Length: 266
Image (cartoon, rainbow, N blue to C red):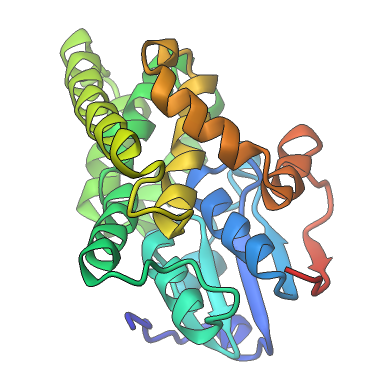
């Protein structure tokens, strides 16, 4: 599993499961959904992205991309949402959300990794354009600090589109995002029509990974009604108790930094 080396005294000193997350983040929400489905006890470290709490040298020491989510498990750090989901599924296999058939298992892993890999192109770009990135605006001091801390070129390229003059998002950027989204939704429709879920006959990590992306598209005003088959799929995901549990923080984002989530029956 892709654990990363950390020199953060904060991370190294943590015992048990800890998740650094933002309540509204699609990537963090898919990990929260899996934690809820498994009924695991964990400590939440809420990062308020609107207040730019991630633009902080201490947080970049834990996650070198400055993104959420970050999982810390007894001082071991995993930083990408797909990697975190696969890590948790392997370490805590019951209840399991991995298909039995090898082909379905491989498809599930690809859907999970793809949700993380294509998040910027398929979700974040469209959401930022539709919101005009107002929530993401930084002060000059925050801009300066961000580019001192950020070393990841994908993040530099993305945020320079609204942090710096002369290179804003364009209609062509939106068209490329829509093309990517349409391709994904068409593929999702085909898979759901075949088996009812994205990776085989049962609900799996694949469905968790993309359900929160669907929610972000919905909030950004994407015309998802064009995909009624996928609409029926998301309705079945949203009917699950774990979805209702994670949705509480969307409706009422926490004001405290630390939150405790006790174990419960899965």
